Length: 207
Image 1 (cartoon, rainbow, N blue to C red):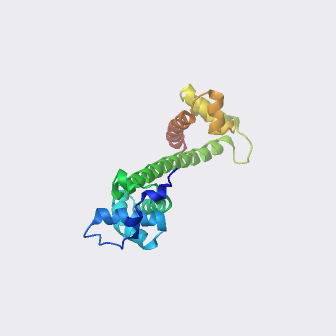
Image 2 (image 1 turned 135 degrees about the vertical axis):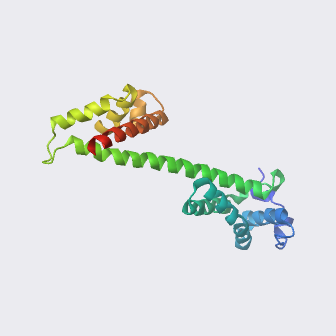
Image 3 (image 1 turned 180 degrees about the vertical axis):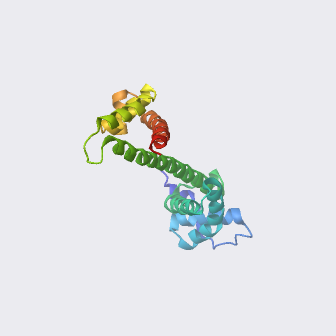
């Protein structure tokens, strides 16, 4: 089996750095090959200088946040350093390969942002449930319990099952998915919708 690193032409790797302004496409490909085969830090610095501003602009457009855009720059170029050996010059330009890495990192970041929003929503609603479950002296108040059941009882049955399973039976989303025989993604979706409705209703009643 041919080593993937050897796909970068050794004659190309051996060449001296060329000016990016004279031959940017060729120079980028050579730099990426040098990173792959020689772990050349000067070549990587050239890649960083060329791509970082472009990735940052893409990140700001994608996330609307400079800090997240800078994280995208770091994640993308760290992956470029670690996985440069996967680049094959004969299959396309270095820019195409790097921007593919960037898009994959962007998708991962968006999934992480969505997941964090769902976790924060859960954190927002859980104190409300706890607050309504107990009176000031710490003992359960039957009237408050009844109010909680009324709130939850207004949800669609499928969403009720998810809320009760997660918050009252202390089940993980994975355990609940297995018990209900549905995908974990469906559990997350139902829980998110249920919590949005509960927060709106319980927030209004607590004003």
